[in-house]
Image 1 (cartoon, rainbow, N blue to C red):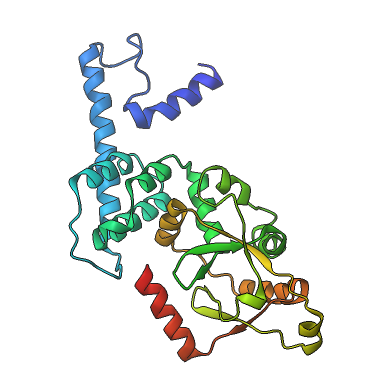
Image 2: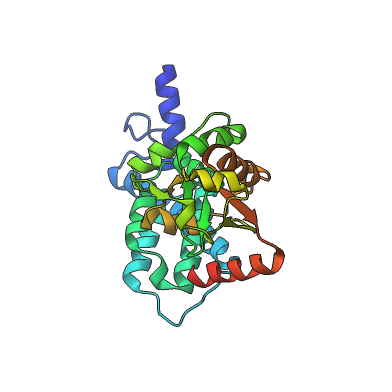
Length: 275
């Protein structure tokens, strides 16, 4: 047996339940027996995947539970896709989507399931990682600051990896930047996990007189990207938001102030209501 044949046999065995389907080497010479073996093995693994995802979903505690009933069509599509998800990280994301849907069926579209089903495992992990660098608007909508501002800080945590263009290409991020001018956007609030910031007037009077209103760009998640991001439990990178806020001040003359606890609570409450 060549190295390739050995690798092929090792790879296929968990899927077909046998070293080989070749009649000459199979312990089951009849086609029907081999078919039953393969289907039985596949369905057993699918059942294990489904039960694990349901177990993970049961442990979730989603907020904003509504009276709207779940639909059989959505659930059928969900389990059609989820039954073949065996990676633990991916299973947790699928479980979270299920929990969010049961809590509020209007909050997760079938289109989002279709998109996630097309993710490779590395894309799931990369998307979860990418969400660690996303801020939220008062509406709860996720966004990232323009690449020229974000990339340097991002690279300090993920060693040069920036999947912005990739997630634009696959429909998770908007291809267009939104622009924000400080002079007309004072009071705008953004959040980074438990911390909230408010866009304030420039403290430097000379800057205001000179009319330096450079502004900044930010890229919103698409509706599908937003739904998937809501299901993500991303990692908090302490210092990331603070450093990026400083960069905005230094490079774009944009000043955000950190809200105090009571103000932050009110902002977080609004975000949860909109989620």
